[in-house]
Image 1 (cartoon, protein in one colour):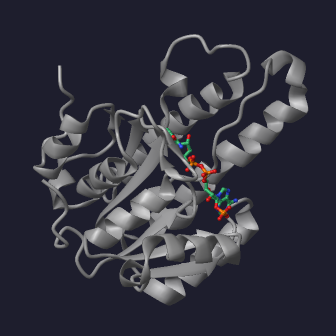
Image 2: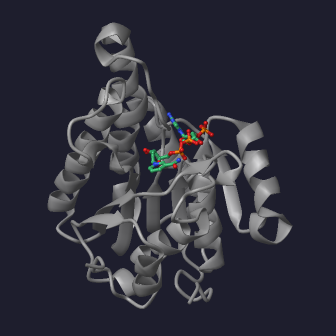
Amino acid sequence: MTLTGSELAGQDTVVVGGTGNVGVFLVDAFVRAGARVLVPSRSRDKIDRLLTRLGPDKARHVVGLIGDIGSAGSAAALQSQVQDEAGTLRAVAAAPAGWHQTHSMLRAGFDDFKAVIENSLFPHYLAAQTFLPLLDSGGSYTSINGPVGFLGPPQPGIGPMAVVSIAQNKLTQAFAVETGGTPRVNDVVMMAFIGPNGTRPGSHLSGEQVGDYVTALASPAGATMHSQTLHLRDPRQVEAALAGDFTSPA
Ligand SMILES: NC(=O)c1ccc[n+]([C@@H]2O[C@H](COP(=O)([O-])OP(=O)(O)OC[C@H]3O[C@@H](n4cnc5c(N)ncnc54)[C@H](OP(=O)(O)O)[C@@H]3O)[C@@H](O)[C@H]2O)c1
């Protein structure tokens, strides 16, 4: 089973981090679901690379916007740009910021920790603050998370990312409580390994499957899903999600 093009047909959507390793697959899937996708980026070159990677047929459904969700002021400017371009949104997926690792969290020191929080956690707050108000009441906001915060005590050097991951999850839950389901807000903790050239060897899930899952969640198939932390580990979950079943396999 795959996307048919009807799931988000004619809808406006945003992928925050859409130029990134994961984001490109989210953009691709939203387009395959029939949506127009707005992609904010700090870099024209990265937007051009995204469009080239998608190819001309898909690229014509993508609108690149130069913008930054790194500060409250720049995020507000981006919100105005999106409002001017699209008005109301049906779906937002947020996958900003990538991986960070040091040999030792303690030896890397406070500046390193502070930089990780600022670069990887704050964009999640600002993405939600910026785009939740633009979603229609039946819309969907999905935060993309990784497993690092959910695996027990972090190994040396991945402490800051584990802190970000758990804080991102709590942030998303807090936003979900505030919206009460209009729009829906969920956190997808995905166990895929995706790099600049696509799905990494050995990953159980492909980037396309992650895109399909997040799109199913944003579509009518996910209409009952709100305030959930969804652990995506297995390709069978993608098939089930496309059919409207988001329960995890035993
Ligand atoms: N990659 C994986 O295998 C994997 C696995 C599990 C979970 N995740 C999660 O998925 C998310 C994305 O990971 P990734 O590997 O795709 O990272 P990535 O390749 O570094 O992409 C992150 C994107 O975020 C955008 N971004 C960052 N700060 C921004 C800002 N201030 N304003 C606007 N855009 C900003 C960047 O866009 P511009 O540079 O174009 O502005 C960049 O394209 C992370 O939260 C990560 O934890 C990833």
